[in-house]
Image (cartoon, rainbow, N blue to C red; front, side, top):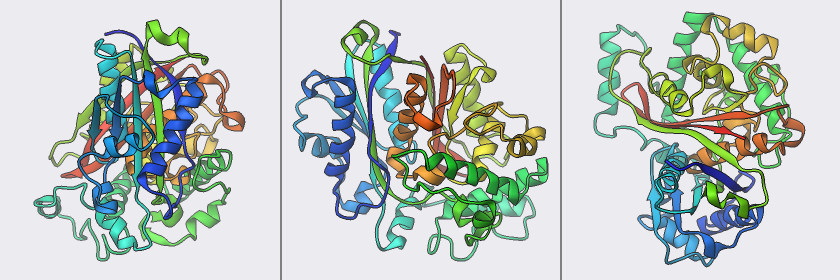
Length: 407
C-alpha cells in the first residue's frame, strides 16, 4: 500500500436547514475542502460519497453522488455511493484510502452528507429506525430478553414515536456498565457538560453553548439514565476531505496528515454484551497503524449518547473500566486532560447528521494534528483517532469504521 495523506478538509456548520437541499449541503463542504487544499475540481480523479437516509428524507436515491456533485460542476469521473448507517462517510473514507493506497487513483474526494431534520420528527425517527433488521430485529430482542430473564422490555413504549429506538438500546447497554463499574447518571452528565464546553468553541457545532450538570440532569428524561442533553440531536450537515498519494503531497499548501490505519467491520448476532464490534475492531486498527492505545493523543468517538463516550474508551482499551468514574471526575477527557475526547463537542453538541458524522470527526482530528483547532487545541497532538459506528444487529452495532491519523 502507498502512503496516503489528507491534504484538504471542509465542513459546514451542522444544524437545521429546512431551506437547503442536499446539493447545497454538499456544495458548501466540497467548496471549503477545495479552497483549503488550494486545489481545483478538475484534479479530482474519483469521488466517494457517504449518506444514509436521503431516500427516506428527500426522495433522492441511487445516484446521490452524481446528483450532488454534478450540480457544482464535478462530473464524468468515477463516483461511488456508500450507505452504511451512521458509518456511511467513514466507510467511504476507508474505500477512498484503499483506492489511493492501491494505486488506482492519486487524488480522490470523500464527502459525507445528510439531510435528517424535518418538522415532522416522526419522519426522522422512522429514518433512523431503518438501521435495524426490520424483519427480525424485535424478535431477536424479545428472545434475548427471555434468555436473560429480563423483566422489563429493552424497547419501551413510545420508542420510535417520541424518540429514536436507538436511545432505548443505548440506555439498556449503559445500565449494564453502571452496574459493572459503578458509573452514575452524574458521571454521564459531566461528560455532556464537557462536550458542550468543547462545542461552544467549535464554529461548526450545532450547539455552541455551555451547560451545567444540573441543566443536563433536568433537561428531560428519555430512557434512564439518559436525559435529553445526553442524546445527540438530529440535524443536517456535510463534511469532506481530499486524499492524495505521497508523491502528490508537495503540490498542496498544508502539512499532510497521514492515514496510519483504517479498518471497517460489521456486527454479529450473539448474546454476549462483552463481545462488541468496538472491542473486536479496536485491536485491528492499532495493529494496522503499528501503535498501541496508549499512543493516542486525541480521539473523536461516536457519542450518540454521552455514556457511549466513556463506554467506547473502555472497549478500545484507552481507559480502564474500573477507573472510568475517576477519569471523568478528574477531567481526564478534557482538552487539557490525559486523553482529550470529542474536542469538537462530539455528536452531543456538534450534532449527528448520520451520513456526515464520520467525516465530521475526521475534520476535527485533521485540525488537531495540523494545530489549527484554536481554543480547543490539544497541545502537542501527533496521533489522532476516530471511532464511528451505526445501526443495530441483534444487540451489537451493525457497522463501524475506525481510523488512526499521524502528523
